[in-house]
Each structure stands twice: as structure tokens, then as C-alpha cells.
Length: 330
Image (cartoon, rainbow, N blue to C red; front, side):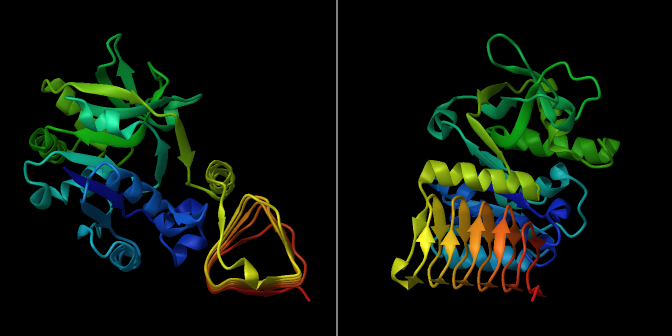
């Protein structure tokens, strides 16, 4: 089985960070979003990955090759973003007739992945939501099979949202349905959508069984990204590397502080993720994500998202600062 991870989106809701850093590489709870996905799939033996990249795709490729040097990888470029169906169709020649597991590159979920992999059926991950109009929706019968899949319906007949996890056994039929979408120009909200292709497969007789996702973490915008960081830090307990470099400082767990960080006369935590080689002096930081190679000096930061190679000096409360930024409140 091969894995397909589409990560070509521009991440508009997380700007300014995604001007210089792909959304999938933003750190939360000590790992990138992409690593959460890759590690989860590797645990069940998937060792061949197809990354559909676009905006800042070279950074995705460099990260994967450096972090997973022994992984068999392919990088397919989606230069003209026309939707999830268009993105995945680009991997056709690599997939061949193999089964595939598709995981959208901004989706972190907790579920029984071994049960999903062992099922004899193709499977789609679902979770009940309050407003299904914002998602792909699955209409499920009493046996747990999906009878209909609709992308962002104006009048939903179900509140079971598709969370972005798809195990496809009949990959040849999936690619047939992609071609049908393209030929008939079937678009939803102006894009060729994977949900429409799945519904096409159902109409062709493919059986999809649903599986429930225990937790579904939203990494799409600053506020929910910080909430996800806090929840995952609580679950993992966080990690601190080289605490001997934390001089006259208080660390309030759970936090994740990467290698090479220098912390002096500061209070860090709770629910803080700090990237590698960052320097924090005479500061208080809580409920925040701080990138790598960043400097904080004499600041008070709360509920903030600060990118890499940034410098902040002075006094602040809530920030949303991208990479390569310098701010002086002095």
C-alpha cells in the first residue's frame, strides 16, 4: 500500500506564517503537522509515500528527505491548484493498481489505524460535527456502509463529516472517477473534489465502510492551531532538550523545547512549543508556538504564534508574527 499526502495548499488562513513556511511544517507539540501524519502511517508498515506539493514545495521535499532519509518518497508538483481530486490524480502513474491511503496534509487524527488497515473494505474516516455544511459529508446506513458522499452540502442529510482520511482498495476505479469528473467538468465550489470522486465510486458499486475518529485536530488557523498544540502537549507530556541551558528560569509543563535553545531569566509554559536554536531572555511565554532560530528578549507573550528567524524585543501580549520578522517595542 502506498500513502498519498496532498500538501500543495497555500495555507491562506495561517498567513503571514505560510508566506515562507508550508502549513504542514508548522511545529506543534514538538513535531511538525506532517510528521504526525507520516509517523502514524509508518507505524502500520507503509513505507512508500507520495507527496503532492505546490507552494513552497521545495521546503516540504527538503524536510522529508532530511527527516526520513530511508523512506521511499515521490514528490509530485501541483502547480495549478484545481482541488483535491486534481491533486491526487497527479499521482496516478506512481500508484498504478496498488491500494492507497490518502491523508490530507493538514489533518491530525487519532483513530485505530490497525483496525482500518486490516478491514477488507475501503474505508473513510468520519466524525460528527455541529455544522456539516463546512465539510464533506457521509450518509451512512445501519451497517456502517456509506451510501452517499457530498461536499459541503447546503442542506446536509447527515452530520458525519469526512475528516480527510481515506483507505482506497479500488484505486483503478478512483482514477476512472477522476477522469469522469474532468471530462464532464463536475466541480463543487469551483474545484474538482475528492468527495465527488468517492460518490462516483459508490455509484459504480464500490463499498466504503466508515470508521470513527476519536479526535480530529484542526490545524487550519491560528486560534485552533494553538488549541491543538495545548491538547497534544497534555497528551504527550511534552519534552525539554538540554535543560542545563535554561539559566535561572522556570518551566511550567507541559511544554516542548527543542534542541539548542537558550533560556535565561524566563518563565516558559504551560502549553508552549519552542523550535530549535531559539533564544529567550527575560521573558514570559505561555500558550504559544515559537519557531526556530528566533529571539525573544524582555517580552510577555500569551496565545501567540511566532515564526522562525524572528526577533521580538520589548513588551507584547498577543502576536501573530511570520518568519524573518523583527519587532522592537523598546
